[in-house]
Image (cartoon, rainbow, N blue to C red; front, side):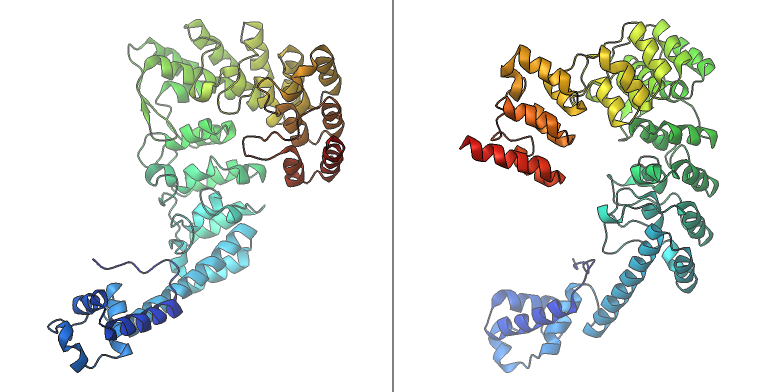
Length: 466
């Protein structure tokens, strides 16, 4: 079976390999001889003992190299490689135009080379198309960028014939790898403020809002990566609400009532393509995602049908966690007033709902949950609550290194850039030799985060402790 030409072929390397192969053959190497007999028509009936009487040149070795790649001749191999390198160069130029919003350059490239609209990266990650780079997800990290005019860039690609439903070798390939699925789970277009506009453009040009398999993968992905507005835009763009999770997240209580009255719920396909059949699991996911999307009436309806307020889904997330992240204060208040536990930590981030509100910048929800949340010393250090840090240490100085003696309070204070809390912890004998989950000491973390004043404070502390 022939080898594939590598994504980044190296002619100089192959030329050296041909010379090495010829040298090995002339030295009587049997493996080199086998390669010649396998791939060179003139040598197929030659024995190893006949070689000294057979004229073998560098051109013969180059032919063997070429045929090992499944190409008929060395010159044909050279042409293929040079064509590939040209294509790589053109595609890289197109990527650069896409991620930097250079519309004029992109138009010129597509006019001169229309094949770029459906081409795939030869040397990048996942054989992605240019639309995957617009989605800014799954491709090379440094190329995940979204310009302000990303919608214009997408329109240019669609006009040139880009396929909105193309799959790639990212995230397992198949239905989970289309540009639309990547788009609705990508932080970059979200932060650029163009995610929902891009969703509309993608669907208008043929992207399937229910996914290429009709299993709702884009909808599930938007929900499971906490982009409720992307979910809503898919729904507004014609996506089908054919299961309880989608109907609840969209606030369609008429559909929710009908579905709940059925003996068996329609299975739910999650963002990983896993099909969930268990009724109670589906009901709980529907409740949590209705919380995320701020559908208070639906949350109340599901609770009236027996879905528990503190029920957990994947990674032990509750409805309160996701309502806090979504900034849905009305839902958060109702949940807390009706017995939702503010002290549950998820198993992915070991975080309370108040942490989720803080991480998402939901200040009103954070302010509401903070006085109601059971905070550890590490939590107080993370949030910059210096008076509470001092109060905890006054009551129990042994807590300075955290519940599990893992240095968490100091690491959280450093992560938040809270220098005065770092000082309080050091003065209380925090152990700076402990390492975090990534194996870094407090000094290393401060240096990595660019907190030089904190790093200098720790250095001084370490010197004094010697």
